[in-house]
Length: 159
Image (tube, rainbow, N blue to C red):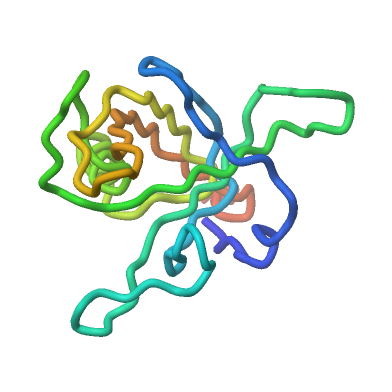
């Protein structure tokens, strides 16, 4: 399958922001990339205590959702990591862990453009920082893209 240029992700798609546990989005992956997290109040890049950048995964989905005539249904989903969340409500994993588990369940080690991804906001973690919203927990299902075969790959000779 051809690679996907992340340059097209710089456009103005709408972010998916689930409000309630049970909110769901389903679509075809148009792109996926890792970007550095930024501070919520200052916009400055975030780093771990060892000066490694704090990363997150950005998935761009083509969905059937529309919010007006100009809406093409593209939704951006921002997924953070974290393995040790204890659920305060519902259940689930951090976004990146849920995505990795969905890939493992689908039997793939690489998530390709054209794969179908369903994301369910399945819970809330116990708050870890006073005054901040609890982390959202997710459950996901990934259906890998089907490989295509070019007509030129077939041997039509009558030997």
